[in-house]
Image (cartoon, rainbow, N blue to C red; front, side, top):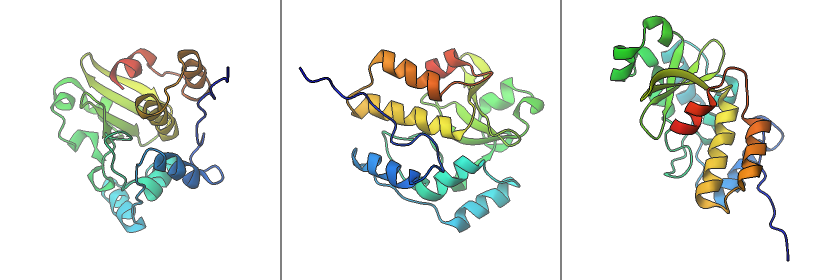
Length: 189
């Protein structure tokens, strides 16, 4: 009896050699077209924010930011829509969070439950602002972890799946970090 090959990430870090090609080929295997964002669009976004995007997010948007898929990075906002969380129009933010809690937060994606996912302009860490339970929680150390998480989600949804023990091993190796709220991430993302 032949042993099935365990899932391996097509890449482990944005910026590693040939990362764009590896991700593009992986996505093509699921009929997900890859579309880039023009440098001018990214520059306009950063000018509106008054700050640069974290380097891994910036590189992702330049290579794949125009891609649209119901199965991969579905909640990722177009680069032109990125906005400071305080002005992004989420009612829960104005109702439940103080200006200090949303300072330096930039909204770039939504969870499946439509909660804002943000990056901290100072640290590049990713935070979820949840409506149920009402909570601000760090869910990824950076955008690269978010990408790897989304790849795992895609594999579980459209691929051969990932054996639970192996998924735990991958999460332990690539998706851990100090201060991450794993329970909320599992529940909401």
